Length: 262
Image (cartoon, rainbow, N blue to C red; front, top):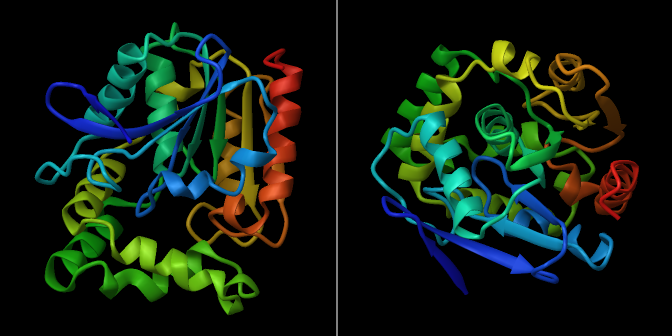
């Protein structure tokens, strides 16, 4: 088990593959930990370095008191890459992970050579919506939001499978303080202007059944960056890496080949 002591926070991470190989870094969604990528990892090209981490308030990382700012989450990712002496990585971010990726690319272009924005946007939801969710979790825990969240996250077909139960458990067993802290970070973030200034290879991935970041919202964000690519995974929701890992891995692998990573 690897823990990076970044000063004000300790982050749990996995570091797989040759240490001298080009690196791909994964940042997961609100309410999940780095196991989000488990089904995709074995399907990706061998010979690259793959890094996954639990953001603050999630998984086995520290859980400071809420609220968190997006700036703090971006600094955590920045500090982790500096801790590992990484530059020119491909950053794959899903949902809030994609917001972190946008912020990091704007701040430290030396660290990011290409972005994959999965099921995310420059701005997600409205402050009033996030305030309601934060209040509900404060009062009754994440369980209060679980059923509605699962409906936004997964297709009807997936919610009927045995695997669905494990993902509901992952959500409800995250620290409530971490969920609240990251919800506050999303609420206060609008990256339309900074993201529109990015000039780097960018792939956007959306799920046709995504109730959290619908395909049009994902495409709108991708269109902010000239030359970006967009891929829609049909019959999948907010976490297509879970519902359609083969197509997700194939899409990511194709992008890695296009940009000369493999």
